[in-house]
Image (tube, rainbow, N blue to C red; front, side):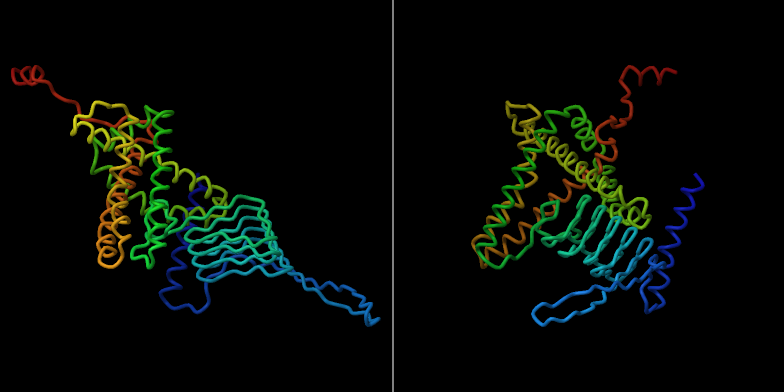
Length: 358
């Protein structure tokens, strides 16, 4: 317990220190680790047969013992350099041309492994991408999380607005249709194999709409600080990929639960005779994604239609954002569908009359 508290206070102090340095204009970025370095010079003899000469080339090998953590600065592990530990950049990118024994994590940046680079552990990029040049080696897992609302590869399915050409707009429509199909298949699989947890998520949204929305927004706000905390704590770096997978699973699971609820409401309103959960999910996914898809279809006309399509696409983004947020909140409140929503007890008329008599 005391060790955990010590780590928490150390983490808070680290962020406060970084904030003070930023406010008072410290010129040098805050660097942690890389204090124990060993530099060796190796001589390599080469014989040039064409000129019958012998050359002695000196090769510098730099070995860093311990972790490297830097704030607001890029990190480059050069050719011949070896790091016996983890490499973490907060607010910067990482270029690996040498070798790293541990994990490599960039928060607010990207990670690039050059053809001569070699990483024994995991590679994580939060707010950036992981790029591996042919010849580069990564023996652990590769995880990249794009941060930002207008990325084409964003998990919420938000596309760039105001695309410049007809082919790009067509690509946007095709990509949207493919994504809808994938989401529909995943939602149907969840409904088939996890019907009871799915029903609990749906009930949570139905019975606690505003509480679910609030918890979902709070969860979205805390996701990034949580990943940063895991990254800075070093010992939490191995858990970052697990946290990312849990987040993706929770988002998809919650999205399916919201789609199930919307589909049930639609079926009740139109008095449709097919009332199975699978039918409800199909209608629900279509309802969530319809406005956004219409915006892209309208934008295919270009010119004035492109502007109209952008406006409709923004409305569609708001609909899908609310759906994803509600789903995340429902998953948190229901603990991945393992907990029934707490509903106040309903007092019957007979109970009311007895209470009045007493």
